[in-house]
Image (cartoon, rainbow, N blue to C red):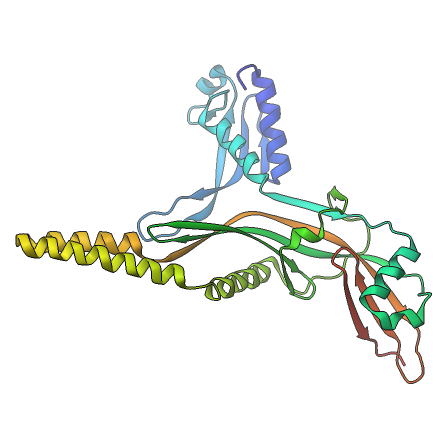
Length: 306
């Protein structure tokens, strides 16, 4: 951004703060105060943490002289690059709604394929169109020993039911997505984002536990072979045991099986849902039928109404 003027840099910073939902205040023409959340890196045995900080920002060297302690934000400065990196990171998150505009006849055909018993109740009443929130998350699973194997896992979590659908994106390849929040009624979620990620992490733990353990056993075999060679080398030369011990620990760390999980990106997706209230038939009560056309999924729930 070498060609930007101080006014343009300032306008960019203000717009970035606004988009990020950060509080800021224009003190005067020269000084801008902003409250931002920064990540404090881990130190020793303390994990990384988030902390709020107040930034005093100026945009010309003259203003910097007038406000000692304020940060000068110009092309190439640390603080401007920090804001740019923050915008890039926001690209890891998305908010999308999906359209569904098939004709009623097409919808009934699809429903009849999924639930043949429904065909005797066609034509169906006009459905109520709603949306259901889903959390889409992509993870990289890194299986590490002295070798590295990685796989990408795509999971979709129904925020209403808590059900997890693997390889979630394959259902949405032909659907039309529109950025932003849906303008139709939304099914109320039954879990918070924190609970949703807990469910996803539990699913990943089960996925890793179910993986073929040959990668662990093969690493153990290679480790034992190298450890045996190391032991023979030190035993024959009567070398220092402490040195052997340290080298053996290095070998253990090299071959030790571990799985690293990294969240690549995440999205909150609103998928269309058609809600049919089917009339009572004989002794059967009214049935509320929920159809998620993009997933090809039907849920039927008996209502309390007779």
